[in-house]
Amino acid sequence: MTDLLLLPGDGIGPEVTAQARRVAQAVAPDLSIAEALFGGCSFDAHGTPLTDAVLGAAKSARAVLMGAVGGPQWADAPRDRRPEAGLLNLRAGMEVYANLRPALCFPALADASSLKRHLVEGLDLMIVRELTGGIYFGSPRFIEDLPGGGKRAVDTQVYTTGEIERVARVAFQLARGRRNLVHSAEKSNVMDSGLLWRQVVTDLHAREFPDVRLEHILADNAAMQIVRDPRQFDVLVTDNLFGDILSDAAAQLTGSLGMLPSAALGDAGRPGLYEPIHGSAPDIAGQGIANPLASILSLEMAFRWSLGRPEAADRILAAVVRALDAGARTRDLGGSLTTVQMGDAVLAAL
Image (tube, rainbow, N blue to C red; front, side, top):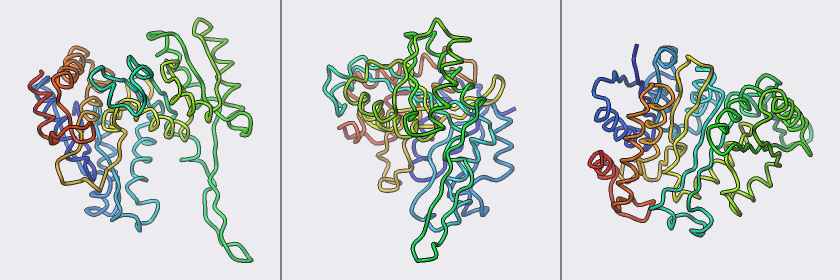
């Protein structure tokens, strides 16, 4: 069995993943690592962004670390074969339904945040995003011509009790090891799916987690509160669409989108999928200036959650902190280090 499958993908994905690989080999020389095509590069080579062979390899590995997918060169590909479709199919195929997106403000980067230092210093927020349901997967979905001209587009938001319960359970369990507070975000005031979400989370809380404090919040208010007083949150659980949006907003609190890792987890015993939440950044791809820390921190989560090596995870996290404290910065953080040089800084701190 492969311990770690790398899917570098497109754009800056290969650049940042290469630095994560260097760190993995430094902290765990015995780790078995494999690599495969995924995303747009797979479409170019095989006509599909995710081959059956690569999906099989992902499902049989202990952990999967991907880079990023997509780019303008694949914008005209059929929708079901675009790089983004491959990512959705990978998540669904691996059955990873709980997306953990931590937003940590490292002390050395408090002044790099778009908010004032006193609002973000000490920030430790965990967003738990439902990952395999909702509007990204619901049907029907189509664009149709209207009789009098123009078009109509339809996307369907669908959630079941079971889908909501399993991701909410992850959020409550995480909160028990943190500050024991969960905010559940939805739009129950205008959406039936949001109303069901609130009802299911409320019932689960009463049955299994009465010791955890639960607060319900409308998703639009959550967006405002994240930029008004982000430290009020501990664990924030929400659906696929709102989680996508709110976690990107939270990313800016940390100083850069290049600082945020993520873990996508399923039931016990299944491999986890780890990825930086930034995109493929085609505007800077190939320039060697992308920040690799989100990829390296995603690797840290893989060691912690799937590979069973918390001591390696602790070493990686400490090395990132030491590198930042020593002034290591890529361009997005106001510095001038290249991608490789930032990797060098983390390796030196190890």
